[in-house]
Length: 237
Ligand SMILES: [Zn+2]
Figure 1 (tube, rainbow, N blue to C red):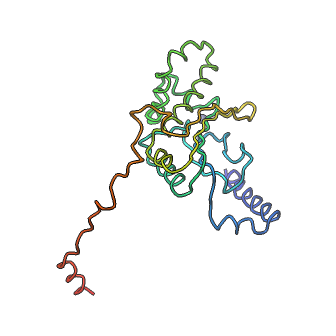
Figure 2 (figure 1 turned 135 degrees about the horizontal axis):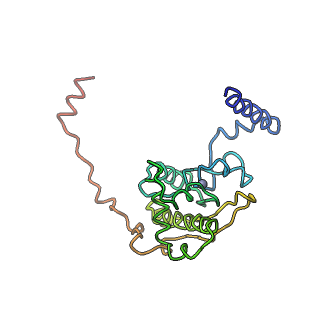
Figure 3 (figure 1 turned 180 degrees about the horizontal axis):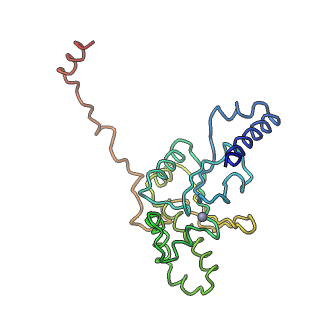
């Protein structure tokens, strides 16, 4: 058990030494800040590490991962990551990357009760239900699972497009959304070509009127200072 744990610490030392060997200032440069061009929303599966499979390094991709790479509009964790990446890091591309043979997707296709996680998997069941006519015609189980992995990504990209954070960004600049699926069997990414670049790509009911300011500057009325509070604060000094 201890050696399993120590393996990670030893690995970290090797990582640090090899980076410094190639570039003595590697960590000093990274420590100055990050300005990644990409936000990656991927599956937590240990076989799909964003940087490794895209041959990128530290500082290049801002990453959020959860079971089956879902974009759920009530997930405060994901929304916080999304807001930070879009508003402050100003990422240019958001990639939802699923993968074939996804345990979360496969689990959602059964009627087994797994426990709390079923609340999460319910989002994928809803995707299955939406595309059930197409999926039910696929007799081969693995192919049906693969197709749901793809459709799940398509829907998650659409969920991103429905978010106020993304639409607000579209009102002032370019932001590209992409849907990819990674093959565990060959290490290759398939681009599903589900590209959304503006809110016209989604149903009208999901479009926010972000171009109109919510409140004009002249509508802002600053509260007048209350004299009682002022005098109390004076006496307390
Ligand atoms: Zn997965």
